[in-house]
Amino acid sequence: MQLLRAVNPAPTLEEVNAWAQSFDKLMFTPAGRNAFREFLRTEFSEENMLFWMACEELKQESNKSVIEEKARLIYEDYISILSPKEVSLDSRVREVINRNMLEPSQHTFDDAQLQIYTLMHRDSYPRFMNSAIYKDLLRSLSEKSIEA
Image (cartoon, rainbow, N blue to C red; front, side, top):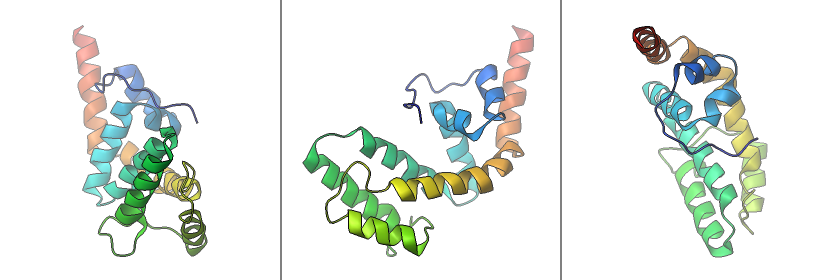
């Protein structure tokens, strides 16, 4: 996957239209992730996006002690069955994470991140495309482009 673009989070009409073409295009832009996260919040599954973003941040880290600390926090926040923000993972992925946590790296959560990405893509993304959040944003930007 391409590195995440860190630009102005206000989307353009072109970007918002592109989100309908693919989930990757939505996830590539900060504005896309923000709009999708807002939608996930309405579905009580915002933790999926938060976990995915935390994993992306972990992958950028190179300092071993920071990696260990971030991995521990990700585990406590999203993997632990005691966490209110626990993401839904199968037992195989949980076992991999538990093994990886013995020596955390930037890739400790790769399998879990892919599983959550796939879940959001297959499950939440189609509903987002039909949601009022997406349609209102698209309508608002379309009206602005007509006025311009």
